[in-house]
Amino acid sequence: MKDRAVDPVALEVLWTRLISAVDEAARVIVRTAFSTLSNEANDFACVLTDAEGHALAQNSGSIPSFIGTLPATVRHFLNAFGQSGMSPGDVLITNNPWQGTGHLNDVCVVKPIYADGTLVAFAASTAHVPDIGGFIRSIVPREVFEEGFHIPLTKLIRAGTVDETLLTLLAANVRTPDQTIGDVWAQVSALNLIEKRVLQVMGEHGLASLEELASELFARAEGAMREAIAALPDGTYPYELTTDGLDEPFVFKVAVTVAGDAITVDFAGTSPAQPRAINCVYAYTFAMTAYALKCLLVPDVPNNEGMYRPLTVTAPEGSILNPRFPAAVGGRSSTGHYVPVAVIGALAPVLPDRAIAGVGSPLWCLTQTGTRDDGRPYANVMFFNGGMGALAGKDGEAALSWPSNISSTPVEVAEANSPFVFHHKRLVPNSGGAGRHRGGLGQEIVLESRSERPISVIFLAERTREPAPGLAGGGPGRPGAVEIDGRPVDNRAQHIIARGGRILLRTPGGGGHGPPAERDADDVARDARLGITS
Image (cartoon, rainbow, N blue to C red; front, side, top):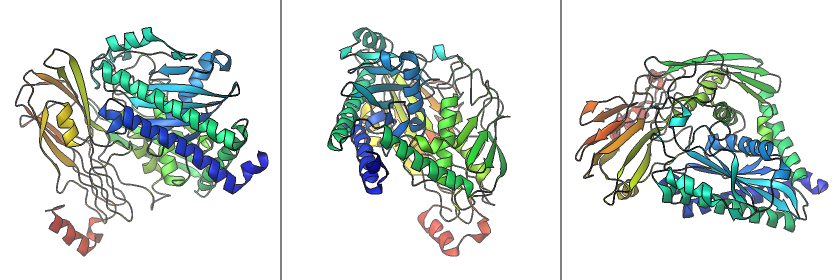
């Protein structure tokens, strides 16, 4: 095996087979999930790790944060149960924010994979379920106990036997029992497929374990990352930005230190944890930091454990990027999505051709709850995107999700699953920041409630006060806005909408790159002709 492990052709074949296995598992989730969060919005990930919980492969369309947090979740299970506490046929489950992805809405399931009785790998998946009980997802709660049903590190299936009591408790505590539990079973089906494909690959190639393959893959990814880091000038690169915050803006401070072939990222000086559900646990902070560094340094290298080894990430305990239990964390994307912005901003002086201007797409989300005609409760979650920031050689894309590659639910699907009718969904002229390359446009959406009963809505909306900044002399994007019946509203609060009530969401534009006076005259004319600017 060792000779074949270092052979580049055999290595490529084996790695590609493993990536194909998790890609196929992702398609299982899309085809079998009950909620639009997985089958339309892509808010899930599948990961394969080695027997020690180190990432080997993830599905190609994974959410960036999940591929950083899921391997750590596997290691939490290993620490809790030990290999001796697991057996063939087990499926483990948790949604603990500090041991999972950062909030209760993401359910993590993990399956140990055995070959001839020996633990050889783990299949893992995280998916955002449509409801987890408690207060609907927002920044309103003040501690995690208010945010929903907590599943500690436990077993959903023990040696092939399902824990029906756990499922009964879960169903009794959520507004969408069929969808929530249906999505969990879609994840389990995906893990079963990964197990089948991994054992098939091992059998075809005569592998007793994945240890040597993993070691070789990790070494190559680590080498690529260290080589890219070593090409940067040594030094410490600080950056600071402010975000909408609550009563006062939040401050994000970062210092990225390059020393030889290693990087340390320190968020000392960042705002303290808040008594609202806008805190971001360390696991998510680490994942988003690693994602930003990968984008800048080794964008073409598939993710695995080796990529993380040259990286050290620190955030002060008790800060908004490393809160203590039982801090509320449901709206952690409203904080965590600024982490890669800060890291990229810090390294922009030494990587000017790769850095992106400020993005108008920290996740915008509308969560709506109500009751159906038969009295059953329900919940809907819809995502909307702002404009991307511009690059040194390219305009920002319009209405595109970043740093989380979540898809917008199609209007037809949203109307079929909710009491809303969409009056329009269109790009907002002049919303992208000016520059040699302009920022991407935000979008405007107008929805009207057709429900016979009042419905509850709450938003996650960012950059409504602090616009996406430009880079290298580019201008800021236009801030976003939330209105109900023609009046601006507090986008952090819950609102009740009567029949005929209209919601307007105007997502932010991305920042521009370079001096606006240097924009090509043909591009200026094209923007005016297409209505991008006026």
